[in-house]
Length: 357
Image (tube, rainbow, N blue to C red; front, side):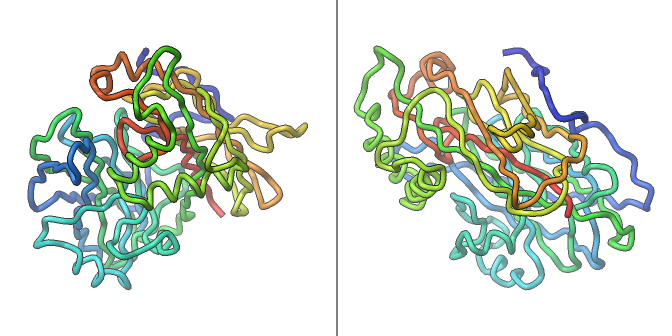
């Protein structure tokens, strides 16, 4: 694959292009107090999700205008940075182990929380290989209330290594009095169901066996999540259509303007598309990445597109299952029917849609 993937989008440019901010800016550097050595949660597992709590010492309401995550190691698959608002600080501190953090597979960063609480700990930023400094679109910012903490949820790919890692996050903020428009996001997903290639066989090439192994590695909540998204996308969760492509149509759950789109798949990913109002005369491609490269992931600012609850968004992904037998990280693993999963050897089809209201 070639670095610098060709991209078709609805006007705009890669979000990593620098943008000047007029209000006085503050730089906040956050680092884990301890180095962390990835550890397999179960026998044979090759992925570890670990959360680290850091304190930005924000004494006034602020807005994040730029962020940069420094993984400090190739074994970091991705990272999501979550806001802990003042009302949840005590819960987060209780989960922390003298600054050593906690295991945090899944979509919610706080132990004991559930999906309904995810909106209370929103994403501040996300990092994947290829990301550099990430500037919020002009005139926007991400709220950072006074007294908040930040959780760094880091996915370690132990197929790459298990060396100790001490990651770092740098935030650029301005006072909330700068009156920037809050930047929000929504997640649009489709469930991959990728069978073993023709001529490739093994026990995990059976979908039910593969899902059982997924549950063993990450817990039954992960299997339940697969069932939920299969159902939402109108498929039989016990026997969904299998193939090298997947797509799903979601109703828009907000009223506002989409200003940025981020594509995310794993190592088998080849092509990504996000289409507004598919199958209608008004259909419009917001982002098309025809040669997706896991090691060169980007967010893309687009010309603002007004949407509302009467609109739909369709996310589509195409994969190359042969790569599982070719890539150094994957070729020594047993063949498997690949589904949605948190592991580097699993897959995703995810559009991160950033918008303003």
